[in-house]
Image 1 (cartoon, one colour):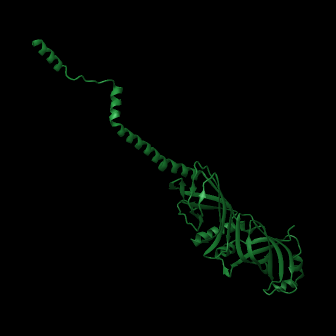
Image 2 (image 1 turned 60 degrees about the vertical axis):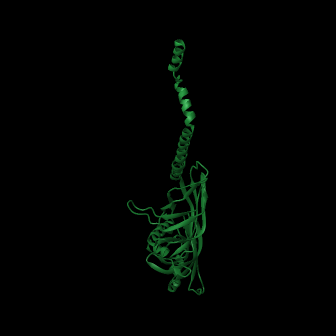
Length: 330
């Protein structure tokens, strides 16, 4: 009986055998029980990376591409002028590296003269632009948009530089929305472009002076042909341009170029002159009309379009130095 009791005791004292296994086996069993925790953690890490790319990397890449891009204004037309507004057309080309397929939503360009250091930007006009597909070479063409003059002093200064300077700088900025698929974000667009101005209308030439037997109804008694150069990329509608004319200190009268629009290049015009009648009786004056390379001094007086004096054209022209035109250039 004692032998049987000993066996039973031995079995009872053996207890439960603990199966530990290797570390890899223990980790495998742990993952098997908690796999859903690791799946969620992995998905959260992937989501964080994707969101970081979407909201960090992609906007930064787009902004860097915008910063590195260049803008060239090919031509700019200002027509139908008034003292409050005008019609604006612009053709321009932007060059950039487009790393992804995207487009700009409709945006508004603000235009301004680059300010001196420490001064604020003062936009003087805006230009609304439709949706633009982003490409390495992007054309931005806008035609016949009625544009309000936002700040008259700033626009007067712009007009002065356009008319009188050989070159000028124009600032353009916007805050467009970039669309990359369903992702949308804003970028800052700000560029300064260099433009050629009209250079004070230097280089005017006059030809074929014709004294009329009978003055026209408006008093015109001499007509000449003229060439007004425009070395810029601007098209500028002026209207009726009136100038005082003289040879040296001798005043001759005044002249009108009617319905003047200055296109880039050489502009051929008719000039309607109101010469002081007494001068037409002086042989020396009559002979000077046929002499080669006679310098005629032109001093701007007024610009009128649709019966309105256009101040932002008239004042810069009147304040500018007189222009020397050459009669019968050879």
